[in-house]
Length: 273
Ligand SMILES: [Zn+2]
Image (cartoon, rainbow, N blue to C red; front, side, top):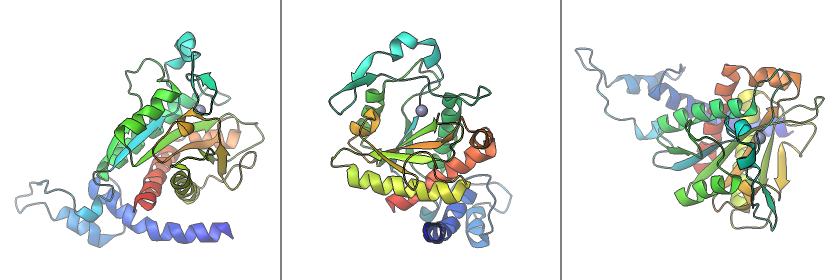
């Protein structure tokens, strides 16, 4: 029953999104009308003039989106720094950051989340958004989870997208979305964001909702500093279970990671429309 409902949503969103991607980059589309308008900037002598994208082709124009790549590839070499305790936003303290998980053959969660984040930033930028990340390739470790939350707050982001991969039981598979469980001004809106991400990811990647945690792909949490400390709509996507062989194989595939990024753009379009 749920699958049917989501499929209907995905059909509505699919055409405009593909048109956006076609107008801004190397993506193919069957939408001839939109493609024609994007090509109409080519002059008679063949020179291409950038006249700007049609407004409809930049659906996230001017919106600030913070992308948070879970963990940092440098954390493994900074164990003392990342174990410092920071405010968890629920009256307790927790570790600044962790190294993250990995697949059984050594593909690191931090590498996965960095790659997806880079793909997502590129797509968001093409859609007109002002994408900002919580760390750059030069960030040696961290930042701590409380500082990551501050990036979204200080930017007054329209949404914060945190990307992770889970390290669950090997027999469990699927993705889930963590959403703020504490009562706060952003709880309801974050739930809407989490649902939009769940729906778009389900239809856009084919990854099923987790069978070992959460319910229908959603998981209310009160222990995540990034969620507790946020003043803007936020969620955490556990993209799959990296300890599960089938999930791991998908997450190691660059084409899957591109689908993940495209799904997140669709989710943001729906959430912010
Ligand atoms: Zn993680």
